[in-house]
Length: 270
Image (cartoon, rainbow, N blue to C red; front, side):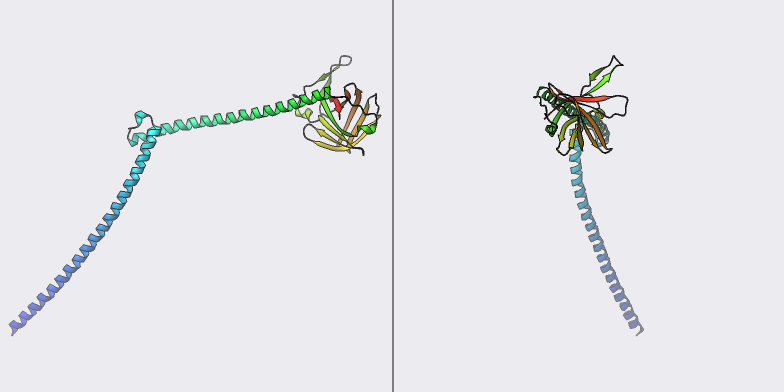
């Protein structure tokens, strides 16, 4: 009886151990399969990354070969990458230096063109002034017979003049109207508008326009007289008018804060 129990117990133990061993083997296979699946997945990902890196490398290599062929001397085309970097630095520094030279040349060219444009504008102004002077000298002389005939628009063709020398040795000198400074040229009147109500508009060469009152003193057909322009304390100017064969000759002193006394002198024509 005891023998039978022992055999039964031993058989139960063997069955239990077999079941546990089968369970362990089953778990081991699953773990191994999971590990294999994980490794395969990692392998495929690494393979994809490798292929992508290979494509990038080919692109960069093509770019490097293209740039190297274009930028480096033919004798340096087959240099390895580590040497090529040094050559590229030298080429880049040379190109940068040339670019700075081009930039400086461009700035100089622009400045030169600007000076040419300014000189052209000056020449146009000078030509216009010469034309005005010739028109003033050659145009038909007009003489107002009455003070009322002064009313209207008048064109003035003037040159700056100055007295020079000591007493009994003095004289008048004319200044070149194209070379006098702006401080003088700004007082050059080129047009007058005289209205019947004793209002006037004076136009200066520098673009200013002065509105004021005017008064004619001692008008005469054959002798000199004066036209006084004023606007309170803001503006005052005395213009002396003389009937001459070329027309009405006018002159006036310009206000300068210097010891120089300079006049504008010329003719006035409608």
